[in-house]
Image: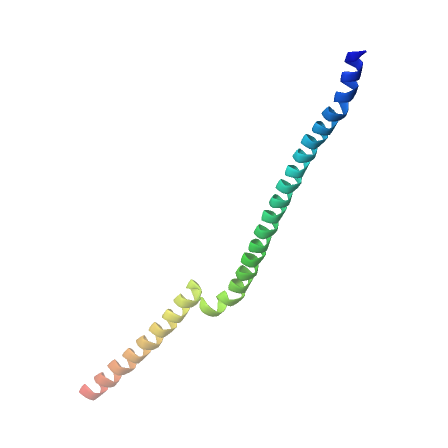
Length: 98
């Protein structure tokens, strides 16, 4: 009988201690999940910012960038004009020396 009385008076204390431990564990899990969600939100904001900046860069890039083919075409056109000028000057020089 003494064991029953002693055991019946200890059960509430054991249950209270177990509940406190489980409550602490769940509180820590809730805190940890909150931190993880906060970090995820921060990273998503940074990703959105980088995505916005990349879209801006892609939209402005054609204004500041000359394609290689365009540069070659422009260089070829300038050389053709210089060659024609050279030919005209050579013809004029030949006409004046004759």
